Length: 187
Image (cartoon, rainbow, N blue to C red):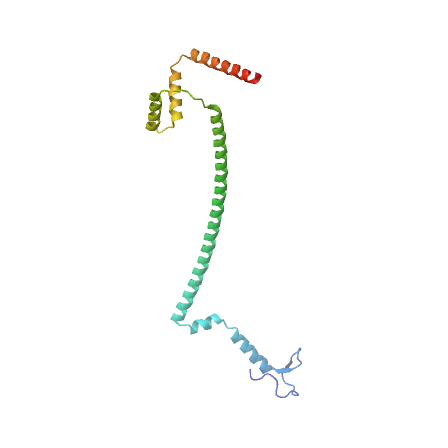
């Protein structure tokens, strides 16, 4: 921009006055400024393409691909992290549910155990050593507890007894227990 201000401000040639500064510019300076603006607005892309070599283009392409890959990796990591967080939350919820189920099961076992303890009354009977050895051997052989073996033997023996006799025997035992309870209450 060689000519910005006019050489002779008093001359009446093509002069433009800047409305802000009040300076006077020649028409030639204005035309020169327009030309420079047009050249500056020439697409940078074309200018860059003319000056780039194949190696430069490859480097830029590689950088763009690397940038895209890093972006995809970040997305993948975020997705993986989100999935891991969801799995962890799901496992925590499942763990809570299993703990609740375990508590319910333990309560049920305690209740069942208490009922079973109420059904069995410990009494002592004199049994021959031969029968005790047989019970002990059957328990070891079958992998059961001694009381389970005795229970099985009694159930099998009771199955052989006539049902009417069983009913009479139970009635006798209950009436005897009631009489004993009544005697205890009196004294």
